[in-house]
Image 1 (tube, rainbow, N blue to C red):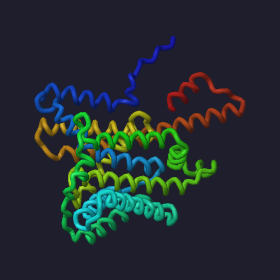
Image 2: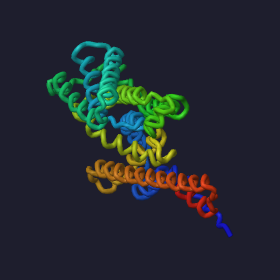
Image 3: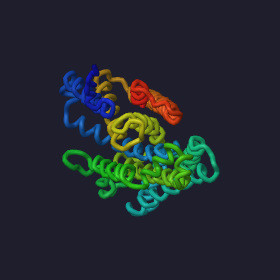
Image 4: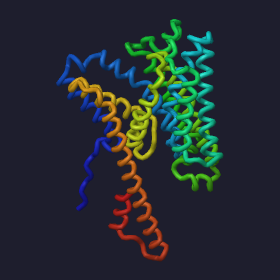
Amino acid sequence: MSSRALPNFGLDRFSGLYLGVLFIIVFSISMPNLFFTTATMHTIASQQAITAMLALAVIIPLAAGVFDLSIGATITISAVTVTQLQSSNGFGMWTSIFIALAMGCVIGIANGFFVVKLGISSFIATLATGTILVAVQQIITDNSQPLPPTSSAWLSLTQTKVFGFQIIVVYLFILAVIIWWVLAHTPVGRYIYASGGNPEAARLTGVRVGRWVWLSFIAAGTLSALAGVFYASLIGASLTFGNAMLLPAYAAAFLGSTQVKPGRFNVWGTIIAVYVLAIGVQGIQFWTNVQWLNEMFNGVALLVAVAFATWRQNRVSTGRRILRSKVAKTEDGAAPTAPEVVEVAEAK
């Protein structure tokens, strides 16, 4: 007699949401006057918007099967550039923003050239690019932090309030919808995922893998520069902040690949991961008053997410091997038995 499978209530795809709700309930009960306030909610939403934008920049090359470790340096140099052009060189706000975004695009083009044309590992190439950008930034700034622009338009760019939230949160979700639509509902997204999932099979079907890998670097560079512009307007340019955001962005990207569409880097899983980590860190910091939790949380999250992704990939590979074995038996005239079919389904 077959037993009916118990419902999992979406735990395989939305466990992060359940964990976030659990965090909110526990911290709200234990610290109602500190955690469960609109001020805390608005602070978390605004402070994590830039990290989430950088994580969205990360998932595009990851979906194409490559790493971009230069995003930390890109977000920093774009923030410094857009600030210095306005405060020291007399450029207008929109001209400065355009130059900063163009710089991010050029960085992405360079990364694509190194990886696609020269055949350098993406890990090594983008790490080298990031190091070069740090040197270029020191040349530009003479190692001194630029003065922030004082125009009201510059401050209003990210600090205008919408329903109590700073408008940077609105920018984040507009950006997320656009990237989600491109990756999930256009041929561009299908080609990028195909390039990262199985490059050789993609080439055999006519996909120009090199082109899509290159474009993923350009997208990541441009989005990182945009995040740098928003950071400079929201908080002010800093010479070192980008490196501190690299690990949280990757932790969110890999943890996000276990959510919504497990096994695939995706937009909404990444957004969930960013804010679940932020809620957990903020609540425990309120509770314990220690400052090292952010790094600890992100490091552990990255290890757990990568370990889970590896385990899942190995499980899928095992299922495919079993399926090929059963198909071979069938072609030889021996049909697979019912238990064998169940075994294949469970392995998948």
